[in-house]
Length: 76
Image 1 (cartoon, rainbow, N blue to C red):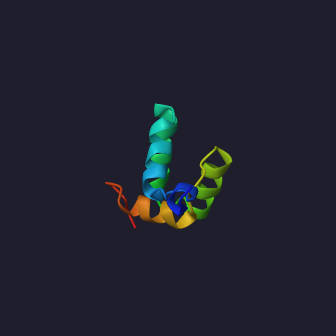
Image 2: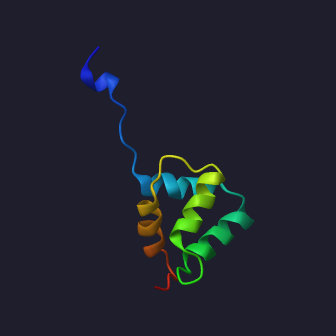
């Protein structure tokens, strides 16, 4: 068995977050996106904690920050 066979490939956290959001029911997904677009109202840490509580795995808080900054309609 080679080294590469024993290593787990790294997945892009933004992709993981996007896939998780896409897997959510439409109403929930729309609410997540609304919250992500309003950093002055909904802090990243609170969003991240709730996402983890709701089943998000393999993503760090920094990925949520990067993801939300790329959303259309994001207001900083």
